[in-house]
Length: 226
Length: 138
Image 1: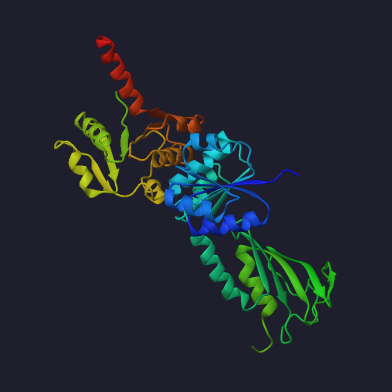
Image 2 (image 1 turned 90 degrees about the horizontal axis):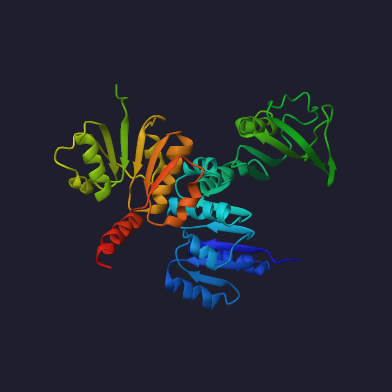
């Protein structure tokens, strides 16, 4: 199989961390950075990566590195404008298959999406949602946000004092925008129907829209007399 | 009757200041924006438009301009990528029909050929002028 190729533009610690993990996964890594000294360090530390020193928003650099039809590009520069332009050049002029653009200003997530870059990552967003997740995590086992958190999948275990024990799914009145997709009981998975009865220690895998998330969690964790 | 137009100049570079001054002196409604308060000293003393001390890099500031499709936007900061980002937002998201952008690196123009953006490449204009004048000597 052809080796996948990834281009990392800009970034310091993030770039270093990514290079290391991609190389471990047998991915061909090309780095573009505008600091000569940092490039030298990288070239020394990662002999198997291609390191280029230059401005990652200039089409000629991409051309020199022959990045046409690479698999991924990640733009990690400090300026959001630079990242947008680098991503657009990669996507439209060099047909890079998947482009990830990082932004500092969270408002740019939506704006850049409208400008054609579908994968926009805001670290501010991620950190805040991680904190939010930590708060919710006290009640639930696992949470996977989808489409920047518009929809989420979480696992929740029915505890001994829960009000929903011995009730059927149709009885508990789940919010409209949520569904229990699967119940794990004694290691066996059950795809529930409306008449499935919830039992102690059932692990429910719930798919929920952001707007009904809190209500669904409250419903499934609310205890008798607590 | 001449239609009423609002002009927005993003970036008070030497070019931006001159364009804004000229527009204002010809009686147009002009707003000029730059992150640096000092840069407005370049404006002509007769400039009577609005001055906004805001950073164009923060896209919220662009959205806050409340642009209308019939407005004219002239993007002339000294940063190509910033100019491109601002022009794309103004053209594609806000639907402004007349967007003029200064650009140094010609190869980036390709990026926006699908947008309603007119590029003004100051370096190639200067080269043309040099060619014309040097032509007399050579």
